[in-house]
Length: 365
Image 1 (cartoon, rainbow, N blue to C red):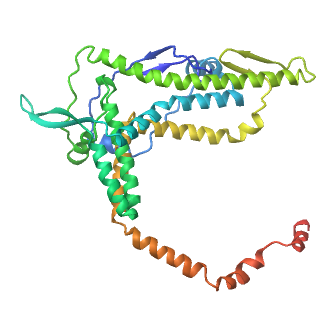
Image 2: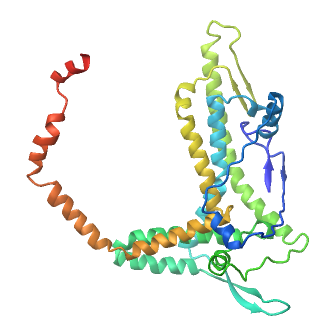
Image 3: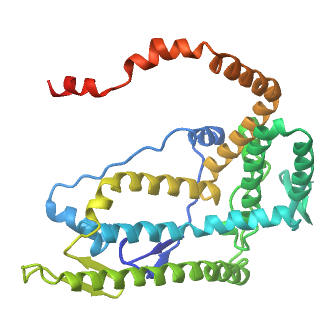
């Protein structure tokens, strides 16, 4: 489901509608190949047009009215912060997962059992137990007694958190918003086949509960958005007062117009401070999109590989003798790097290359 907005820069952003796309996938290649393809970077597609008029029309269609012109620094910051607020659902997923972990909240556990008919299928019996909390409790007890296992447990806990978030996603009442389970991907990876077949979805299945579920999440995000909107309005008022104090600056054509929800300034006061970092902030935006999709299992294939990577790193770090490694690393650093022979290193390699006042003449020549 994709939400539709008028453009990408207007704040506060109000949803104008949504598009729901349902895709039927027919595997032309083995499913294992599709799973392994997630390890490769995505293919970039470029769309070229012959006429400038078509290019402007395409930009207007994709970016809206305000997206066809270059954003000012203030508009860019508001759009950047607005997108950060849209990632709030990932933050709440992690927050709920941590609460469920430490407060021993039960979660659904699906126990498979064979179901015979025209074809072999697996049916599931659901029970509710705080299994993840019990595992975390045992891990912390062992970690207190053996703190050198912290690197292994760190990656293990990251994988466990992703599994808990997946449980939240799997618990959505709507079958259209669920993701595939880790066991499903493991069966495909190992056997190129999975007993976890897609369920038969009847019309309007889980619609009422799904609406209540989405309304709860929307309320939490609405509070966060309203808080951000209040702060942005305060910032806009401060900018407006500052521009009024500057006056026309000798040019009657220079003015600033403020419209509700739209920032349109002819004087870009923040330009010298924001523009040098715009490429860096855009890179952060792209990485946050990628990380958010992994955390909430929106891209379940990549989320599976990240989870398996954390489990693998946890196992590798468990085999590394960290106690011996830390002990001998500390000994080498202290015995070799802090002895009296460091004075010889200073005389031979450090002191001759230090700049003095007499060396300033070399720069002027």
